[in-house]
Amino acid sequence: VYDNSTHGMIVNYAGSGSRFANNTIYQIAGDTLRIQGNSQFPTIRDNILWADAGRAIYVANDSQTGFNSDYNMLYLTNSAAAGSWQETDRDSLTDWQSAAFQDIHSLASNPLFVDIDGSDNVLGGVNGVDDDFHLQSTSLAVDRGDVQSYYLEEPWFNGGRVNLGAFGNTLEA
Image 1 (cartoon, rainbow, N blue to C red):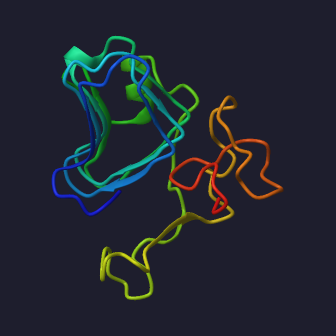
Image 2: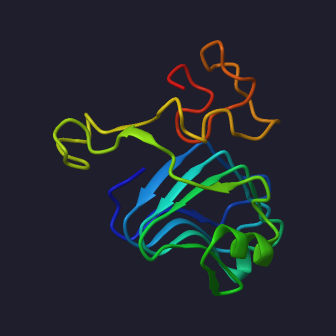
């Protein structure tokens, strides 16, 4: 998910047991992932969240009950913050972990995508056909997912763990 104007993804009024997993979101402005609307017990796993401004993860006060986030990669560029918890921005992953007690196994790193703006060097371009958000083999997001997440759809040899992001647990991993 990319090239949105205000938010990458909004989880609104999510019921207990909602799972948000294996997504790649690149957000230039606004929040990359926004949890709101009295969402209860959402699980956030195995995602790559790239925030250029705004926050990688925003959790509204009414949606903090049972919030569970881990095994994600946050890539923070320019003025981006890792997250917002109790209506306070947390600038770094360490600040976010200390405030929300979440994302203990997550990391802050460049995901090393193959070529996000494709051969035409235009992000989005003609329907984004040539934009490539696959991971380079040297990316820290390779084999970095939750040990409980499925990975068997990934080509062999897959390292025994799911890749983070949209291509985790797919033949395109």
